[in-house]
Image (cartoon, rainbow, N blue to C red):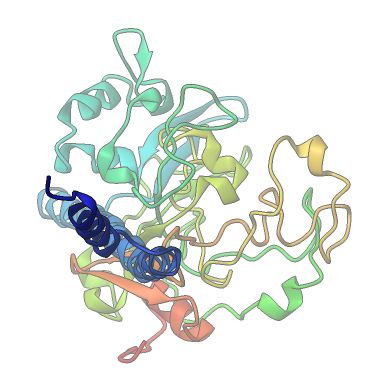
Length: 353
């Protein structure tokens, strides 16, 4: 009988040739780890590029909506429009975000606003306030905090707001903290603003938000294309904002003047971080990050720093210009260049930024 031993030995040798040694297995694992390490940043970069592309499309839609509005109405919309007709009565007639609704394919919401012309913030469809409804063109997919408000349940926040230009920059307490850093961030207002009456905007979309005793005209002097002395391609009218870094934005995209329209300013450096505090006012009243009165420069309740443009995209922020173009500005931009791009009448032709 023929011995089976050589056959078994040959089979064992074949199995040994097919198997991995421990060292080989560790090498394979290491290679896979390196490949994942190389691939992950690329995947993250691709996802960010997709988010930024979607955000850019939103800003483009807002820009085209503005141009269509202007073609039909003959003037730019108001940034935000609230008037006092007496010491006790005021009317909220909307903001850039409500005025553009018919021009961004949101006619149903626009009709609801038209049905409540003096109290747009109470506009509803059925019994549902429109502020609880998503407007996709106003939401950036890169915002990690998402659309729902964290402090006003049911309401939807927005990631874009009409610019007020350089506007004011509060350096006294006035109910807010005076930051130690404010002095280094304060810039002189550029010259050249025309007389627009008693309104609160230094940007191209005039805003009216008069206090009792300074009763506003029913028809604020809105800007037209011919009024933009610096050129449409050199002036932006809207940009990105983050509700997670500004408490008033938590009241939703359709809430009086607190949706950012006509109150977001460029005298605060681009992407200035105010995210080190959240929750209720009382919960952070003892914090101090370089300021006084308990609320520091980084607080989302600080009117001196929280009112700037801010983006979820790393080291940049997107803006819609009056000619319908969309551009992303690096947050290292020269501060004066940034201010000039938001102010239509400074006489500066900014060509490199």
